[in-house]
Amino acid sequence: MDYDIQKFSEKQLKSCDEEFSNLNLCLPDPNLFIPKQTAFTNLSKEENFPSLFIPQPSVLINDDNGKVYFYKDLYFRLPEIVWSFQIQSSLINKGNFTTLACTDLYIKYLK
Image 1 (cartoon, rainbow, N blue to C red):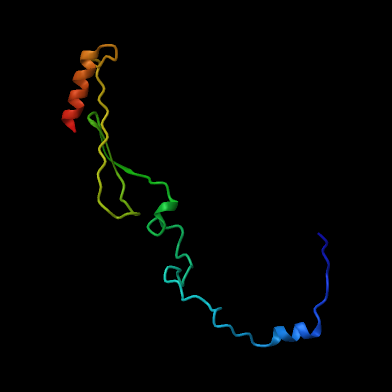
Image 2 (image 1 turned 90 degrees about the horizontal axis):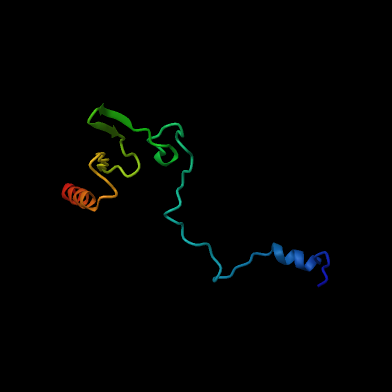
């Protein structure tokens, strides 16, 4: 395929200056989901952009019984609790099916 560079004629250039009206071509209605203001207020505040920051929970309780963390949810702003337990016992033996079954029943009882 050959390509070529050609100049527009005066008639073609003048036709571009004329007002073009076609009722089928128009701008769309404004999109309500596109914000009018896009300036960031303050990127250093975690409250403004919680998804940009890695959560740093604070330790509320730390003793022999366990550790309790707290982190305020800034993204969804909904109260939620997550309980995570580790049961460590020398009585749990992976080679003994009776102790594994009892452990499984105990965990299901806790749920």
